[in-house]
Image 1 (cartoon, rainbow, N blue to C red):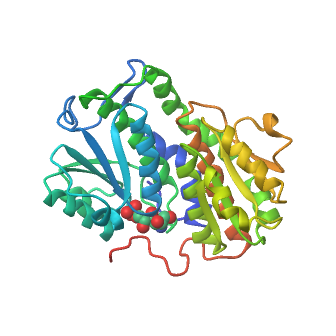
Image 2 (image 1 turned 30 degrees about the horizontal axis):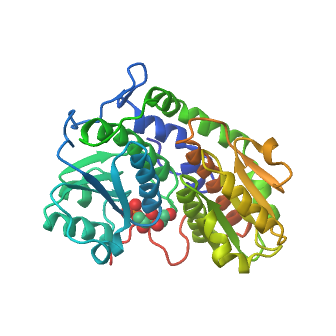
Length: 364
Ligand code: AGP
């Protein structure tokens, strides 16, 4: 793996642009598209047959990947909840022996996530670390590990590791669907498997054709930035806002689209662009909510695989290729990574080392 920034101005831009390679590494040897099967190292068929439910624990971007993963598990009938690791011990009763606690952590060193893992272990739960760092504390302490194989990530803002985490969780969802006693494996896993194999080239298409820089330049000096989505669009909206705020230092919020009318709408003005994630499925209400913001004068940016269908609503679009509905959110997220990057670059921010933030947060 080449170290250094290479031809890129920032590590973050390099890491965004090398996602196709990172994703190939995540998938390599684990997915058989022809047979529509997964084979994750060390996890023989039946490894997870003792469990009734999954609890994810994670922070920041990894928490958003966990939210995405939880939706993927819902889809195969596996009971799961994603917890912010720092709130885990205040939100749950004791984890049971039939609970699999999945810690999602790029570094494997985040104190809040390790604490949640230890709390669950003390209650008899089994733990699985989904991490990028072989030999990290999370990997060493967990009962099981899955490495996301994204390669080293230097930029404080996580980018390629989010994509590799979600794809790892998509692969795990197949393993869990085959193992968990009450699960119902997807009938269309062959289509999902094909879409997973195609994902690196779909990301490449986004990278080659993105107009995120133009959109960033257009709105970068506005007052605040809202990101909305439903279902799989929700974690993408959260992650889009997190990325935007952490490197631009502009105010950004991400929430489920239905929340807009319960308060945030009061903040909407012609100087608060609204980014609506309308990829995947369940988009009708997000479009309605975006219309409500538009009627208050907010510029509307739709992240979509079908810009022509919504040309009356969108001031401008961030287009992604069409793919399996469970994966389109990942492509939307790449557009939002580029948006945040170009906005921060335009503002001259310290993109790889934003103020007040550390790559790995080792204090609670
Ligand atoms: C993401 O851009 C942030 N740097 C931060 O939220 C990060 O995702 C979080 O601290 C969790 O880190 P981990 O994945 O290494 O546990």
